[in-house]
Length: 176
Ligand code: IDP
Ligand code: MG
Image (cartoon, rainbow, N blue to C red; front, side, top):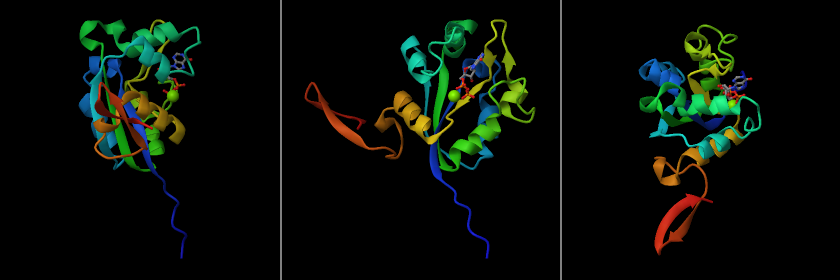
């Protein structure tokens, strides 16, 4: 008998970036992601501060294009009504790989045209890859990113260890 494949139960962070909102792609992207047979366990709309962007893209913070990347990622490029992103946590078997496959390569010009980035991405005038979606690239980054964007009680199931911290004598759940 064939050996059963070793599939990993994983969590991954997905962000629908402002260019997707400008192009009214939210429904389309969520439909594409539903092909991965994963479950959404957290979702919200967030206005991206410089601080959050620097933490999320810590590996790019010192690049010469970071300022332009921030303008894009925060939606400032598109005006006030697009200064927001949609953030999700997906859960399921091989969640990280499955979502990255559907998302496609980072550079939209190199991404397979059947992927989300290949179909809808572009490179803007400043050279920034506007690729409509973010998805975690490893279990380590998924955990770091999920903890950055969500508080424990914003996720419908417990996924990482937490601790209770007292703020003004009021108990608050935080990541341990
Ligand atoms: P990923 O989004 O596929 O994980 P990262 O290397 O983590 O790729 O880069 C984060 C985002 O920063 C990309 O999705 C893209 O929007 C932008 N970006 C990354 N590298 C470049 C670059 O060399 N030029 C322009 N934009 C870039
Ligand atoms: Mg990345």
